[in-house]
Image (cartoon, rainbow, N blue to C red; front, side, top):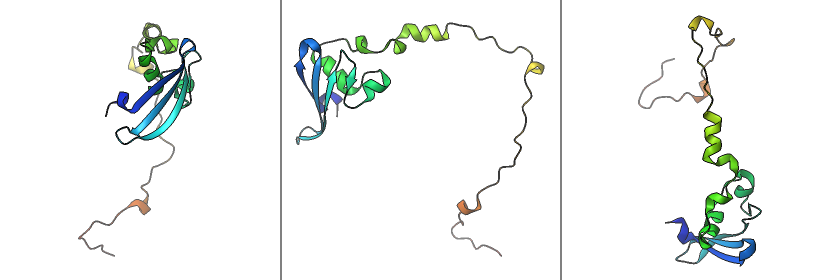
Length: 128
């Protein structure tokens, strides 16, 4: 089922971009999961994802589509494509000669299997 059919947005203060979105579990039967309040200007939603991740949650996307707003205008600058390019624009030089690599030490302990997790195969007798 499409996400748009599960959400019903109501704009409370359209000029301030304040919305209430009701999320339905089964819209055909009227069962709803919850009611979320979204304030697009402050970039907050009751679900907490918009606040924590600074990226649009489904409730905020529903509110944007209700008013025909561009959802990308509410996304934090960190997630924009220009910033992603800035992270990877630098060249990372490879270490040219293998003899210059730092030595890899083996683990100071030996890993042993956990005998309690061993299952007896079906149909076979265990010898003692």
